[in-house]
Length: 460
Image (cartoon, rainbow, N blue to C red; front, side):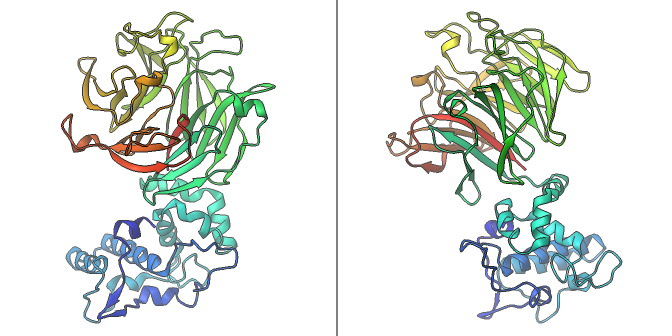
């Protein structure tokens, strides 16, 4: 649970004995203390979790009704410290528990003792890693989790958890939760062998992970659903392509440029709506480009770098305004194709990420993190990369935004180990500049090979 993790699994005890609150008493007898046989042994949804979540949420709800802020703050503070200093009083907030929408007691609520609106708020605020176990409780929970409604509610409440989805070598896709520091293996994609061995691109949008590649029959897109926990085919673009730039914003994503099945460099773009499962053709860019990168910043979509032909690199960027449906060229927005020892076709697409509407890049040649100056249309060095990007011209390295942090995923770079080890590094730009703290190590993935083929970060 989110609150449990942030409070370091606080124990609810008073003078050495566990404290049984009226909220908890209302749950007992309705929520079985023995999990169903279908539960695995790692179930982490405990009664203390419900107790803590219900108390904090109810305190918030009641305070909105005009209850004194000071008293509630004191009670919630005491609860989170692990010793409820209420001197035997019942919390004022319990008076509204157990009501339905009409203010009457409900015997069929999701969480007995709470009306369904409050119960849904509690479930939406819990960690999404708990949802598969919650679905095992009963048919009603299973139906709720399977409907995807909680994700829509989380979006409305502004609750976002960022998970990292990673594919290394021929291993199946795996998801990493930075909060719980747990890895979860996804089912294998039910594709043909051609798709397995072909180059692939990935994109997380809404509650879906899209993987683009080629099958024997041509271009294909496989979609992993966070709701169904399974793979299915995604509708193809109106003009299927590869080597494109892409990015997502909420439930929409934009892909731009790339190459068609004949190798032609494209300047067309398309928008994918994950709620509708459909593609919409957008106006063409000003320049054709492939091997480019895309990102959203300040509510607009950008594409930078890439090649306009098989031999010509591009330094300009383009900005797409969703409201006016128009593209604007930004000259010299990218530095990566200003000569160098290697031809642009040999380098990876620009490694870029946006954190708090600020654009950063990982320079494949100098192993530096650079920040884009929007006013002066220039780049400034802010930090060294924790791993080398120049050894493979940027290929096999992931550079992503994960919440408020930059994420660098690559081989080695941790304790001198570089044999089959993938390391996840993170750094919060708000913590310092060039002389700031070192990169944090989020995780070390053993026996993962030495190459990151695909990486996407899903926030929902």
